[in-house]
Length: 251
Ligand SMILES: [Fe+2]
Image (cartoon, rainbow, N blue to C red):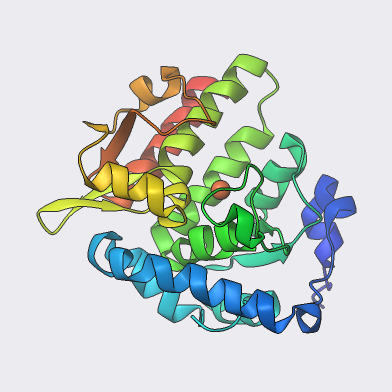
C-alpha cells in the first residue's frame, strides 16, 4: 500500500519554512497592482520571452487580472512535470532551498511588492517568484534541470563549490538567455520580472556570451547592479547537461 508523504516530509529541512497562502486576504488594490505589473511586462515578453516561458504561462493558468492561487497553479503544474509552487515564509537558508528544489517544490513567497517598489525589490515577492520563475517549471527539460541543480547543491558542503553553483543559478535561472528563432530570447526570472533590466539587455546594453559551464562557474556577479555580461544557451538540454557535469566536477 502506498504511504502518503506529507508536504513537510517532502520538504525535509525546509519544513519549518512552509506556510499556507491566504489568497482571500489579498485586497482589490493588490490584485490591481498584480494586473498592472503583468500588463506592463507582457507586450515586451510576447516578443522577447522564449516560447517555453509563454507556453508555461498559459499551461499553469496564470491570469493577468488576479494574483495567483498557488494551490491552483500547482494543480496544473504537477501533472506536467511534478513541480509545485510551494508557499514559504520568506528567504530560505541554502540547505532548505536546495532540499525543496530537489523535491520539485519551488519555494514561493506570497507577499506582493508595494507601488513604491514597482520596478525592484531586494527580496523576491510573489510577482518575481510566480510570474518570473514558475512558468518555466512547466517545461520538462527545464524542470529536470532545476531538480538536478537542487540535488547537486544539497550534496555539496564546500563553500567555494556552493558559490560556484550560485553562479550557475544566477546566469541561468535568474538571468538566462536562449538563442531561438534567429534572436536572443529571455528566460531568466530576473529579466522576465524586471522591465528596466530586460529592456537594457534587449537594447544591447549587456555583453552576451555563449553559455559555457566552466566560464559561468568562475564568473562573479553583483546582485545590486544591472548585469554587464550574460550567457545565452542553445537549448535547455544544454543546462541540464551542465548540471550533470557540475555534479561530476564538484560532487
Ligand atoms: Fe529568483
